[in-house]
Image (cartoon, rainbow, N blue to C red; front, side):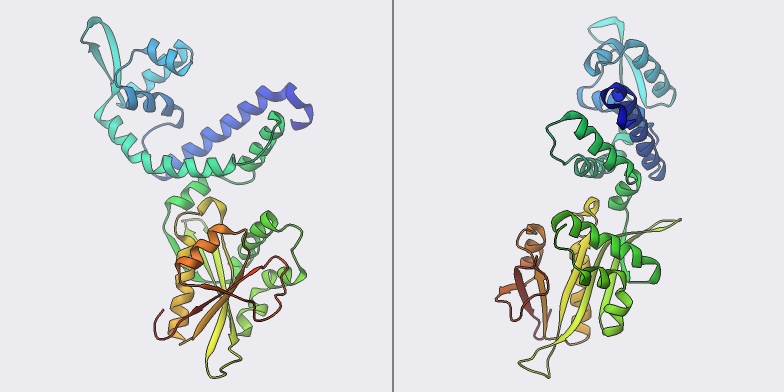
Length: 323
């Protein structure tokens, strides 16, 4: 429909609406939330302001009276709402959340918080033209499942060694942040290392771990990290290694996934009695820099010429006897 421009605006907005309602309903079903996604505006309004009449609900939400009346009837039958008499006018009925409705809204609150983060990420783009902005929003929503992204943030994350079935996800995850931040600086070395982690990293003594959310049907990879062994030229009897290819899916950032992956490397380093960990990063990756600073990495002058143009920061973490 995009090629027809503003003439299909209504149809495109309807398509977006239908897709969003469907995705949210999928989340509610997976989390066993006993409400319909279409009920949310009315439930949230009554949760905030208390009892209101059907007319007042329609006015505040700018919906038609018949539409609100139809929804209210369904919610009352499902015991989410209950009717009471207005104490100031006994001829007037008010609707408020039932105890069941209150509990349902309490259960859905953490889901709404994660949903808000995911949708804000999807709409975090710059456009001065409404139709261009609409196209970008459609691209974000239709390119991946909103339900899966929200469930990734809600689910338990496990960090496991890279397996063959996760190799494509390892490539896609790292390539996503490279394309976002350094689209003109992606090298053949990047493609080789990401396309063949077994050959380029693991077979050379390195390790790769992925952060996954397990579901009954598939495993969703939401993060990855690699360790490449090296040798400290100033002291050949001490072992060191480089931390690299740390990436977390944008919709799962802020949930401690990166810290969990980095901690996995620390555990490996301690078990193998490594003396030092090094890494290269870019000064524009401020969130990554904060993570490294917090975990004891110290910026130093590059001891070599980096093969990556984008890398302008070199950091080390001395391990000693303790991580």
